[in-house]
Image 1: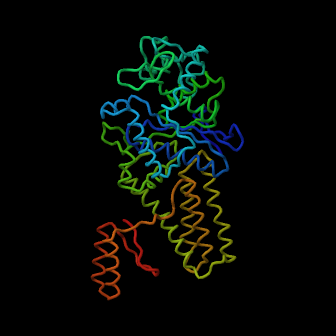
Image 2: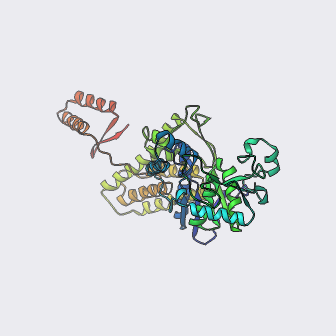
Image 3: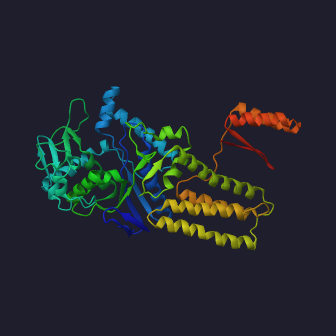
Length: 468
């Protein structure tokens, strides 16, 4: 399996530190509100990477944090007049609900920054002891220039940063030794949560949080560190500097970054009014559709979100689900169950689709091409599995579709839905009308149900329904 490493700017064969095991850290959300669809992309992409690695036989220790102390959380707590921990606890729970709806599996560990403060203090003290950090009136800064490899991830030159746009500088105050130095610890302000430390009562800087949590739960050197490309600089660059200076060894072997998500070809922002939460999308679509949409492009390609593309994703996913549904029916109603010799040959030929799927995923997690292989399999199912085939043949093809989709975290099986009593009554009334050969009434009821978003299909096994 090859992965594109942001550090080296090339695809590299993936070789874990410890054979058969993967240590993977993915930067999680800051929990001050419902997660937005920009947050959803790395969650879905790297959950899929984890699933594929597990499919290949790796034991994956997958750590993804919740940043639960931050200026935005504090601002929200002041706005609502409740403690900051109440805000973060509320939105951690809401985030977990959205993750479950997107079929994103819980991490092996979901550390919270506020529960790991002592480890951060210890790490900062080590950096001070080694001469990589200094205290000015209770604020601790990292000496960026002392780490000679600073910029190796973002491929930025320190002197260019110093002379270039101030927007590239890592937050600067006059008390710093160098404008490029960044904060490891800051004193508390009135009304803010704080912790006791040797330098001041205060709280950690954002960057040190991830360095400490990765070290505690995965070790000093990890296999994969991942996140959105907006985190490359300064967040991940600073993580490398802190971790490598503290631990005296490389921090992460492979750095994976997903590209930005745009909305109608524009950057998502609240000011443009094109900011969508996952919860809002979930009111219009099953979040499996959002997952399908996210995986329909390569994770390093910019992705454009629009109503039209979501509709297209919904229809495409429905093709897969319908194929699996049809195969299930054929397997259950087949008169013969044993495979014929001809069917055995077809199943052997079907293996080419899994091979294509694996080749795509082995090539830097190319989910777009992996989905294309699934659609080739769906086409095979629609053309090769007919009425009169054996139940074993239909079941085997269906299982292959379900299995490949599961690696992507896509659910190919149709959800069993229940109808409310009124609609159940209307369907029964229509059946009675058909039996009485009152086809005008039966058609009228069908139209009424369609207006309510219920599509009826008359089959040999009886009437079936689905939501429009």
